[in-house]
Length: 132
Image 1 (cartoon, rainbow, N blue to C red):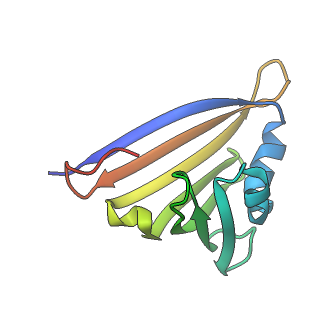
Image 2: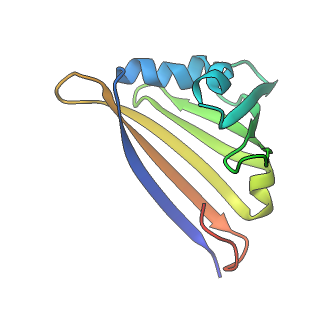
């Protein structure tokens, strides 16, 4: 039986939608400096930092002292200011058949900052696997 799930959340961000989107699109290699220690490293494995289809390897640590890696391919929708990360392999994929993260940035109506809409779509290998 398929274990497809979807989660989403919205974060209020003080910067503009364009700047937030461009940070993930053009400056992903700086994520370790901006992540407060959660992301240890981002390496480009294929393509270039700004191109659709680029493959990156992230090393992250959400549980103190337990560094993990995930390799993903990236896609961009410039018109909608959205980025899609499709996970390919790594620690995360030991528990999930598929795992896709979409980030879309929307300007706030008052013009002060933006809303970052995060969507996580995943399929667990079996019911015994926890939700992310």
